[in-house]
Image (tube, rainbow, N blue to C red; front, side):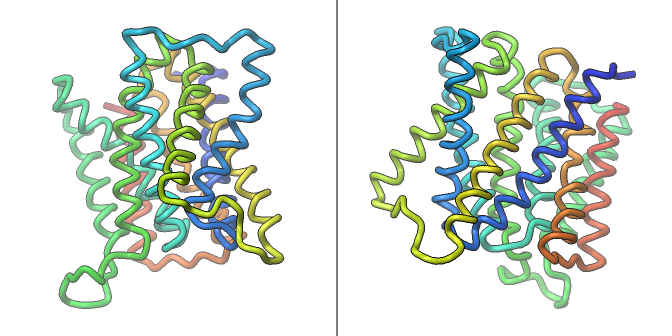
Length: 291
């Protein structure tokens, strides 16, 4: 049975990531997904740096873990870009559940990479997740499947899911060696640097388009960044103390928060097969806990 601190950190993580998705989606009314990716990372980094200076947590990464930290940081940026692109095209109630299946995907990868034993319940959980993904990603109105059958935003969400699965697998050894706070601090440093470089190389406009919503959009992007980094800090603090399968079922259930919040605050509507898909994904995530 997880202790109180483990449960508290996991639920902090769950709610932070769930509401971060809602704030990010709302901010896209005045920002491009590129701008969202830059701003919410930059704001959270601006908050982390003074804290790191105050507590003396601003070390350089250890040489043997620096390449893994850098690769994970770049993959994290790629995941953000795909996820924000998915949000720009689709709704939270589709994009968040798909991308949040990273926990089961990471477990599947661990089976092949690390030779984990596949117990029947774990296998059933993985199958449920993939069935749920198929229901959630495809538009089931027609009799034939075509490229237009994909739900809006589903393709980028799938790419984000795979990227985050790889990040999560790398995050535990790096956090155990380097510390959770400094790992996330360097994630943000790498993320802001990579995104700013892309902006300069592609000459993307950094300033939002003039209009009445851009101040609100920047505020919401900032809130999304703070919530996102709060979720990551809670996750790394937990994963250092616990097994992967203890934390994933709670943390990766953030689609429940995101979907219900999006229904109430953004007016998202979910078709019956999408609701079934969300349910199957959540059952798959929960099933991993009892492996």
